[in-house]
Image (cartoon, rainbow, N blue to C red):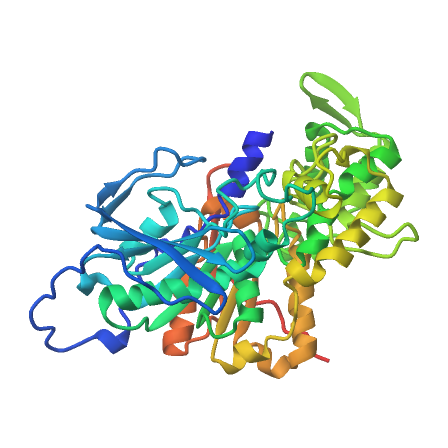
Length: 517
């Protein structure tokens, strides 16, 4: 189960970079003249933000061709026809932080293949960015004509283990590294990455884009909120925003199971998901095995009480207590008095990750143990309703200002001309979709419905799971590029999903309706 979850989390790393977007019009010439020589793959000395010091710079040339990724997990298919490129790795540090942060920038060596664009690739779970050699997202972006970059934020390369960096030797949270992971290293990546490209090619970046999902989605929102001029376009999918709430809310099932005295098997949980899909599949007028809009699905888990299911060769009868537990997990965590704290997974989303009895969601478990309690031995499988609420409140109190990433004030981003696209799967099994809806509604209320659609659009994709399993079902990056560079706002995203029987379903998904007040 843990290895499968690791694979799902790893799939959040950007895949949309495969788009080969049209070259920026600013660089189209009637007579290109003689072909410029390839840029030399050599170290440059980039500028860095105030408070950030460049320690070392290295450069490594790659021949291109068909590039394989032997260490990638889950496996990544080889990428063909990659041009020769140069990896420039810049190591930086911050005053008083005792940190060493790597920023990797991959650049096509043939100057004529560079579109003038820079793309920053986001991370997954506790991985700020993939710096493996070669890194699939960066190689894919290079093939598409981008200079592309990622950062490790100084926290290493594990998406599921923070034991090597979360706590200082004194046993307190390493606030410097957490700040890097949350926001600081993202700005460093933008500034350093764009300047590396400028020095490498001898001209400035024309357009800069953020591309990420899950943690990478949260990172994109962090940049739009805190550094609104770093990127003209932000693609931030299935964003793990409101982190201080999300990262505890996804432990809710452990408290529910303990209080309701049940330990449902994955097979039993799947029976509830299947029944909900069957009941609500045709609400949109089409029978396709997908709940188009889970918010309209009022099927009650208690309808399954008394139903017999066969799990691992044994016949089980769904109990009232198990049905009540599933109903509470779908509803999301509450205070002891019943007030909503956050959202649960949508009906139709797999419950394997967020509702595994005795196996808490690893991202939430690490957050609770190393950051909120500062106690690696803390056992999240023993939570009760009361202790869950205390843990939730403690996370908010300590870390909302550090990593909440849910400030709805995007006015500076809008004024700068920035464009923000988010898609979130309606069957996301890790990051509850309604958290993104909640944020969008708060932006609408703060900025006014009339203006929000001019720069920010959210698309909810029916039947799509967390980060679409590492694919881009919509070519959203292409839509973002057209919006930024040509002023063509996306009226729909065309989302293609594959059903269990192998058939494909294509939908033209409109953006989430703007909340008007």
